[in-house]
Amino acid sequence: MIIMITRARVSGCFGSSVVAGAVLVLSAVAGAALAGAFAGFLGAAVEPSLRALLALIAVSAVLVGAALRPVPWQLDRETDTRWLGYQDWRTAAYNGFALGLGFTTRIGFWLWYVVPLSAFVVADPVLGAAGYSVFALTRVGLSALLTSADVYVGGGIARARMVADPLAFAALAALYPVLMPMV
Image (cartoon, rainbow, N blue to C red):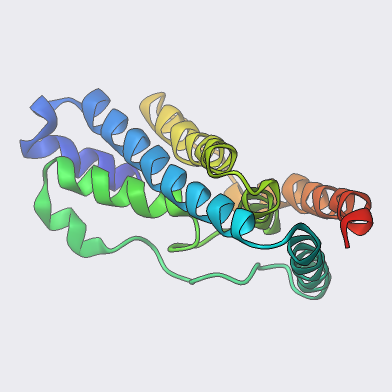
């Protein structure tokens, strides 16, 4: 992500890493809002009892997956490195959009599955978009903030998983009592 911001400011974005970072974050929020609205729309299109049953199946599958393997199901890839060739605002915009969607790159944490599942369960495109946007803002915004402050977190994802994985179990398990009466 650091390279995406650096390359974005080379010949575009008025030569400013701040503008490039803003483009990155805003693109991530836009991609997330679209994905969240879509998931909320899908949830609204399904009868509540069927929606609860589908969500319960998804929660169960993710809990089993998380118990059996440390790495979540994901597209195990970075964002497209060809975007670095643009060396303008598109580098940050495309990267931000892909990261905001979440599922188009490495996820890193089982907790991510709460995001689309929640958007589906609330069955409201606006709330789905809002929830997904908060995800993108934290995923990309915090990275951009740490990059601008030149902060490196040693142990990165391994250290973060020590906190995120138990949170994922707790968050997903907390959905059971909410979903069960709806089935």
